[in-house]
Amino acid sequence: MKTNNTIQAAIDLTAGAAGGTACVLTGQPFDTAKVKMQTFPNLYRGLTDCAVKTYNQVGFRGFYKGTSPALLANISENSVLFMSYGFCQRIVRKITGLEKNAPLSDLHNAAAGSFAAAFASLALCPTELVKCRLQAMHEMKLSGKIIEGQNTVYTVVKHILHTDGPMGLYHGLSSTLLREVPGYFFFFGGYEMSRSFFTKGGKSKDDLGIVTLMVSGGFGGISLWLVVFPVDCVKSRIQVLSMTGKQAGFIRTFASILRNEGVLALYSGLKPTLIRAFPANGALFVAYEYSRKLIMQQFDV
Image (cartoon, rainbow, N blue to C red; front, side, top):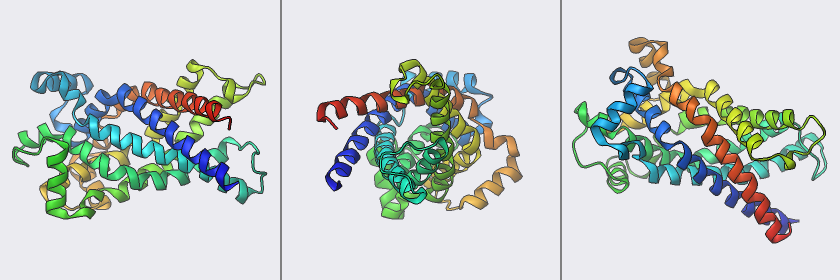
């Protein structure tokens, strides 16, 4: 049984990595716009204005700034997330008294996803910190908050380690946990509820095609972001502005945004996030489900 669990964990890890790659390649430009609008809401009037200014200032490559750490972040997060998801599903079965292979309800899957997100946050936080800093680098230089030189993954990581030590890679961990744990309850809950809707005619969830998986993944992504977006906005501010030496925590950053910019600032960048959520998370689940099936067929699991 332990061997079977190990094989299943390895399959979930590999399929999660495939899903994370598909998610980044599909949605990176919108994620870049989201981070820019969250950290510098006064510079942009909206998504179109942000896109035009980014293109005029840095060219098309500006939309893919931070892609390598984004790939690393999503591959590491989704690998750990889906591996932990399978493990947490087994824990939920034990807690609720279900048999080993008994199907879980949508609520049970949502709870398993929420537990799994706590493990994924530890893998995600350092790589997302580097990604966010690279994405907002141009604006930080324009505002005079940093000097030239921090424009690659290596230089950003070197600066973090030099100024704050290894634990500096975990700036924003508490906000990442505050976003991930409740967010992935709605992410997996929304995904499973949508799949349940498409299988009302007696079909199995395993028989769903690419389009329905895309729609279900997109619905899960939108469910997540509508709930946790203000938390994500605070997290982005903490991670980007910490490169200036400011060490404000979640509560102080949240209160500062409300006091100085108003509640709407917490939703700056929501539009590109919701636009990105559908194709990116749809691609994530399509890649995850199909690669998982393929690997399981190859190993006859």
